[in-house]
Image (cartoon, rainbow, N blue to C red; front, side, top):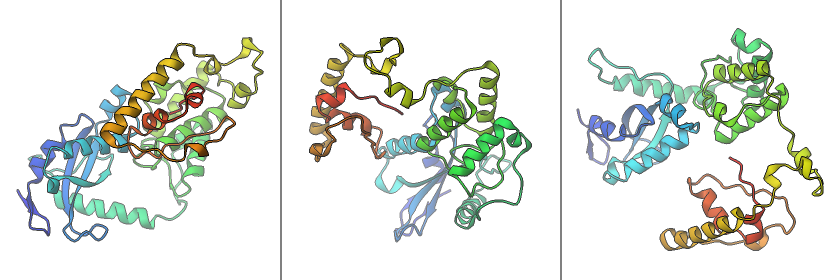
Length: 310
């Protein structure tokens, strides 16, 4: 079955869905033509994606929106410009299909319109109560933290996806985990954290950590306030890196040369960097190369004393 945009371009959704389904992170995808989008008269292609959670768990990836957007952008380069996806939404629920496994495109389009309308008209608070599991000790703490970051989240359920249902991006997710660790007094290691996608999994992980007695580590204030002459309590991130620093500096300067040659990288404002440390450098998530490109242009002293978080 073919469809058309207002430009007169014909596109075949099934063929495009097969192409974009090549990504291992995409479980299901439906491609629709949207005629009105931010003043675009000819319309664009919009993708509704159901992520492959097992693949995210296997690879320890949690930033679903960023990962799927990156995958689609790469696959879009292999098709003509009028077949490229310019708008994306992600959902938890399977896409509705007929008994012959055909996508119910009209129903999907209606659901998408209702989801967008609900987001714009969602009232703050909710009449319904949270799930009983989220009213117990650990669950209540996590529910409170979620409401602090998302006041209009409504009634909370264990099956809610942290990113897709609650709208917490990768940085908000890290902050949620860190605050939960601080309030509950337990630590969750990175391997466990990378396998958490729903509120129920988050609660279960912290309950297990509480039972095992995994104490949370020292705070950053305690780490940074340790005198330099106190080697017994000096944190490993403050150790001198005699071999790593020169190697990292050489790699970063090589990356800078390559970025200038292939991406026309230009850097301005280095003179504005604070002369005294510590200070924060925060890339704005324009691409997955933000971090390496930012580090590549830093002065030697900054690279030698840098700690990368996230």
